[in-house]
Length: 244
Ligand code: NAI
Image (cartoon, rainbow, N blue to C red; front, side, top):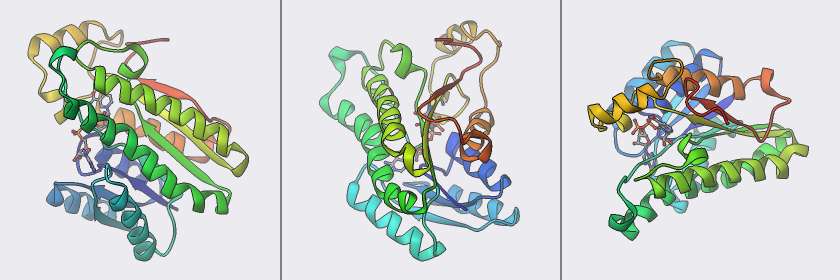
């Protein structure tokens, strides 16, 4: 069975791609800029005995997404059964300093891309009467966060999107769930100042920063048969940070 992970060359996406391969999925690896790490990941997955290919595409561009799905089908000879909408960016700043392009870039990448990819994936999933949509949201989409109005809006949006897709396609054997990571150690959070990191750490009941693998295990659960009676849910992987 074939899984597509967007923005998979590093961080959480990379960990998800590897975990899915370990769980016997073949993997289409989408990347936008970093080709070398994508190639390395591809070799790692092949070494696990699974099929893997890399596909360059900016998922915030609808034309490129349509082309991406065409190429994946040609290359693997099958369509995507598990879609992980993971690609994401931040453009953090206070509202008064937030430029329209900071807003648009974040919404285009974190929210519109999930719509584009899901729209392309869903027809074949509906035909097959099977599909798994896994959207990577954020706890910030549940709680909001000063300095992240654009990012929080995109992640709250993806949660509403997930629930709507879950309702619309439940009768075709397709589930849609969201994962809301808390504070995970990746390049995205590496830019935060030490005092900000310490503040966040103090708010995590389990007392440590999460690893990409923690999120990957939740994604593998939603991709698996084990979760077939679960849809439209948001699972926080955050060390207990939110609990709502
Ligand atoms: P990261 O910056 O390490 O990885 C993001 C990936 O998305 C990169 O590979 C990047 O090239 C790719 N990407 C960005 N724009 C793209 C585009 N237009 N087309 C294709 N690929 C694109 O960040 P990280 O932490 O691994 O983030 C993964 C997801 O997890 C994101 O959706 C992020 O919002 C979410 N998340 C991360 C948290 C954290 O603490 N690191 C917390 C909550 C959510």
